[in-house]
Amino acid sequence: MLTSTALVLLMTPGLALFYGGQAHSKSVLNMMMMVFSTFATVGVLWVIVGYSLAFGDNAVGGWFGNPAQYFMLSSLLSESVQTDGLPDIAFVAFQAMFAILTVGLIAGAVANRMKFNSWMVFSLLWALIVYFPIAHWVFDLDAGWIANGIGAVDFAGGTAVHINAGMAALVLALILGKRKGWPNDSARPHNLTMVMLGAGLLWFGWFGFNAGSAAVANFAASYAFLNTVVATCTAICGWLIIEQIRDGKPTSLGAASGIVAGLVAITPACAAVTPLGAMAIGFIAGLACAFGVGLKYRFGFDDAFDVVGVHLVGGLVGTLLIGFFAWDGSPAGAGGVFYGGGWGQLGVQAVAALAVIVYSGVLTAVIALIVKVTMGLRIEEEAETVGIDEAEHAESGYDYSGMASGRVGAAAGNGATAGVL
Image 1 (cartoon, rainbow, N blue to C red):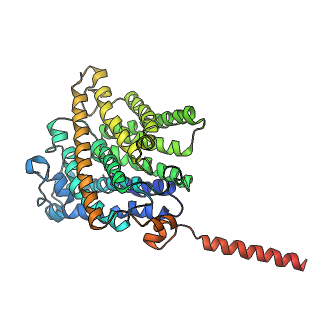
Image 2: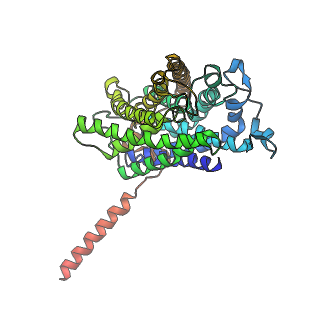
Image 3: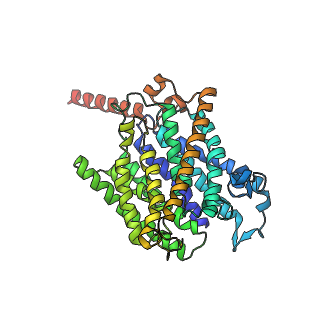
């Protein structure tokens, strides 16, 4: 579990690289800072009250856990506090990584234009009001109404993490507004090598995310691990096929995005479907998300790095397809339409997805509007033109002045040599 925790922690730096490479060169540091900042905000909040809200006994009709039950984790700081031989504090650390990553996912939708201080406040409020309660619904197997009440299958967070973050990204992007010049003058990725490295680190860390959700090194963990491999492989195929047909060429950005799309879609289903089902879900997700990233142009919302197209669409694909591909011989034990289970599981999956969409969408809008009225959300237009790195952090990702002076010096040296000769 500690190894899985470290793997999931690595996903946040991986995400920073994945998003940072897609940003403009004058915005890369801000983008990476937005992702890394969730360690500072959500990580601290998780210890104080987050774990209680997510895994405490039901409070207020089961909407969230008792905030006082594990306040500051004081009641868990004993070697004797274990569940099935696993120290509870290890599970606390594992789930902390989920909370940190989920908030970081949202940042990709609002790149290049959101005030950093406003983002910090938004991330604190969003984790407290949106993520922690939804995590209680989905991850608390004893008290959560989605996991325990209606019996929805979500092994590692398709609803709580991906649909949740994707819906929040859509709402925040709408309230924040479009980047200057978008879509006609939107910046292309400045470093695709960084993007692919980030995608690789995400895939590596995702084994902790999915297999680690079994909470023990057993058959279910192995099952989830294998399905995570094969679904991601077929998702890459699906995305690249769409690019080849639509654009005439497969791209490295498409391959990296296909990796993430497959990982997102298999997350809820990794312990519920056969490897063949996992391959089908991955391939469908690759196709659906490749189409989904185009929704922002059709409907006019500026989702900078396709959080909606990949995480909301991919999360929905994986969550709903459980209703078709779930096999009752899997560790999850649910049966879908294709395995004689009827339509009931599909209905349950749809209820879970819809509940997260509505709750996340409404509360994200409330939080974003409060921050907008009190602090302002968006940087000044001039700062956006100059670059958000300089405006918000007084730094730049690349030392262009040094490069320029080096070129001038080299040119002067060449001229002097030519004069002597």
